[in-house]
Every structure is written in structure tokens, then in C-alpha cells.
Image (cartoon, rainbow, N blue to C red; front, side, top):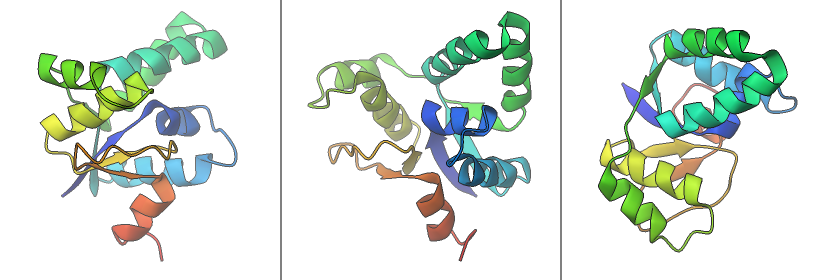
Length: 140
């Protein structure tokens, strides 16, 4: 099974129906729901997503949305090593660096994000949802 780490921007594209990015994010989560892809994220990403959803929908609805999301997404913990590596990374984007190193620690070969930054030190590929779906045979 294909496994990948999903960043907050893609999760929010899906949950908040953000145009023009919703289409490919929705396809990604649809294939995860069909158990053709295993998607992972971290607690830190879910905290970021919850904060934004809470502003848009309120506390209870934000939790309901996240409960539904949890039915189709796995959670990968960030350990001390991933945290330390992210803190010492050349990247100015600490949250993204933490996601790279968390993905690497869990042998997840791809981070799916719309952020084009890439950290060669991790060996983890960075792809947007459309490219990920195309490279794995879900789109022509």
C-alpha cells in the first residue's frame, strides 16, 4: 500500500473546500477512504488544523470534523530526534521541517503539501496532491 504524510495545507484544502485546491485534495482523501492510500499526519498538524476549523465552525463542529477525518487518516508521532533535527534544520519553516523528519522517522517516503520547499537531508520526497496522484497511477 502507498503511504504518505499529509500537511495541514492539504488537509484544510479538503476540509474547508478551498478552491482551486479542493479537487485534488478530495481525490487524495477519497482514495484513502477506499484504503488504496495510507495517509498519515502528526498531532502538531492536527492542532494547526483544529485552530483554523475552530475559527470557522466553532469548538464542537471543529471536533466533529476532526473525528470524521480520523476515520481515514493515521497519526505519526514526532519524537525528540525529529524535533531536534527540525530545530537545527536549514529550513526557515520549522513546522514543515518537523513534518519532513516525522515522515522520515516513520518510513513515509512522501510529504504531500502545496509548499514547494524540499529538504534533501531527509530523503523524503515533497509532492503536491496532483503530482502524488499522477505518479502513483490514480490520475492520467
